[in-house]
Image (cartoon, rainbow, N blue to C red):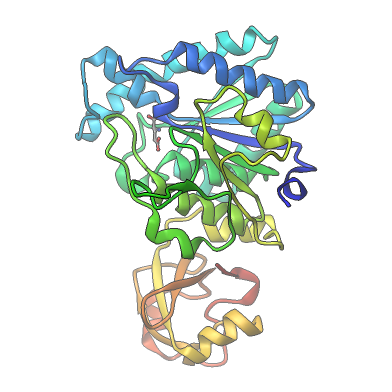
Length: 357
Ligand code: GLU
């Protein structure tokens, strides 16, 4: 069953967490990174394209600047990232060179992927690098991005990169063996497969690590983006020397999140995942059903409440009356026009500009 999802994988995004690539001295963990680069180089040699999303810039800078725990102030985190990122990159460059491969640094901010042209440019650059046989190593440009405009974390960044390309598989290598059922209790075990993310969400917590951010909750948020993009995601251990090889051979390694069968098209992926929405529309049950089940556009009578100052063309969250977001779309009107309630026989969000999540 697993091998069915892994048979035709030719482009992989591999995300490496801070806990995997940095050590207790808050420096790049040379031995671990050597082992991971060897695994990734092995995949390139097997004819696959590999894109790395690596955390660890802040973690690797902490040792140099004398922090034992991740600093709270943004400016200090950014300073750590500025010091740590080149050290991390120098390590990747040297280690990939041992396999006759070139690594490239790509630092992204959320805005780079939100704006349509920049989104397409970023994609073209990555595809061009892959065409040259280069291994792109991506991180968030932490030194210039700050809280409200961040991707969230690198789990989300890796899912967005997988969705941008698109990739055939996303592998998140972390410090645990997968998504663990009954964590910390008797009968704890790695779940081999997850088909319904909502059903496992109650099990997932954050992290209390001294260097990392994220934890399982952020991995599940990333998993939603991957599976809705039609991309399988595997969360597995970054500590084992053969995780990638075992995964690609279809062996039961880590937790597989099964993708939704229909892959969203590029423009719909861009609408659904790459924006910080500018407003929210709360719709009644009739509209919810029309959008979810009948493939209809959103019309004025279905909108019960409209929040936010937004322009025509901005991305909006579409929620049911309990506040649960179930769709996203590009607004046909400004927030004020919608609130004025003078709109008749128009589409507030046209079906072509709407994605049910
Ligand atoms: N971009 C951050 C770093 O390199 C990590 C963010 C994350 O791991 O989610 O330190």
